[in-house]
Length: 53
Image (cartoon, rainbow, N blue to C red; front, side, top):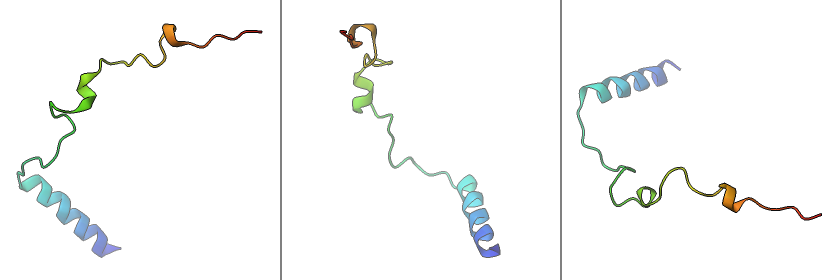
């Protein structure tokens, strides 16, 4: 609808004009994601399964 397009346009326009601080970030130094090395060793050659026939 036209009203939805106007509201969306206002939200996008206002987002470009206002400079806000970041409330939450996944890249914090205390994040568990940064404790492991990338790529993870989940599918490495040492952990492949062996088929016995």
